[in-house]
Length: 457
Image 1 (tube, helix red, strand yellow):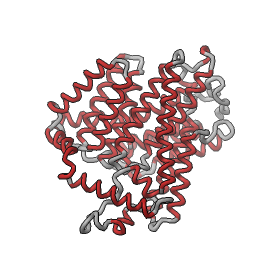
Image 2 (tube, rainbow, N blue to C red; image 1 turned 90 degrees about the vertical axis):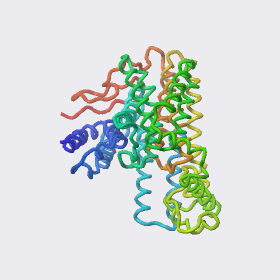
Image 3 (cartoon, helix red, strand yellow; image 1 turned 135 degrees about the vertical axis):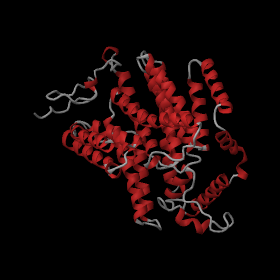
């Protein structure tokens, strides 16, 4: 029954995604982060739903929106993504290992970049931005809440893996949940009903519990950084301090012993084989960087060169499959130029969010800009802290969020330039964003973009 339900949803979404590609993009996002196919037990589990939806939405754009809505938009961060893909392609052509496994990983990365660029083209209004963020928040929030309830019912049972795909590893899963905490919090508190705000707070608390139960120390440090930034940016710092104090007390008196022991091991890394293995992997990465400084060893070629550089660092047959650090991963596999481009993409996102936060503060009615900027800042910070301990240089969620930051920048500046009476507000009709009525032209924000063609009979 579950297989039929998921299959039916995807099948029904295809004609809508073809006619309105943004609907396809929302479906693609839902499949990427909620991993509905991995919740099935039968035939649906092995279906390539994301591929179907992705092809249909891009074909729909080619048929219905070329000349009316660009595939992507001009933005510095978009340029950095394209340049990263070009550099990754060149390094792959020169790589030692070009096996089918490596090619498959490269194609996955290329698809991530293409979808991120497509997102920048599709998310061109405030409502679309909200719907996209809400889809991400609810999809990942489902697992955060589910894991928290699991922890309560089992008395703190360990969560050893995520749902699947790029979220299968427990560390990657925990990092995604950390990045989702600000989205859940800000979007929930933005709700018009009291129950929405209360549900958001409960969801965040349960998600925090899920993160700790994964035993991911990197995610725990990321969560601490995110919570500190949220407190720093909050208006009611006294209340925020009480919440943080409550979190500390919960850590000591509510969380199970195995979680506290795992987190406490951060301070004793020399006695921890996992931590020492990471330090050794970092040393190998630096040696690879020194030997291949310009274009790197090639995507997924870190392990291939392990034996060349392990002397004096690792004894015996021990090895690490990855660099255990996103920055060193990009640097070693893509080279120094790619590493600088990667950092430029991330830090430019923070720079533009800082400008937008200040813009919102000095603009009447710009509170939503301030809140969104704070939300994105906290989410990106969570990634950048976690990236120090995880091999997530090609993580789809970070590229998706960077694309949404770029879209947010364009939307916010356009909103500010409009006369106050013509600005897109919270009460805009849903059909302004998601036109699905037969025989109706899309209702669009005035001046935002040209209307799409009429539906066929």
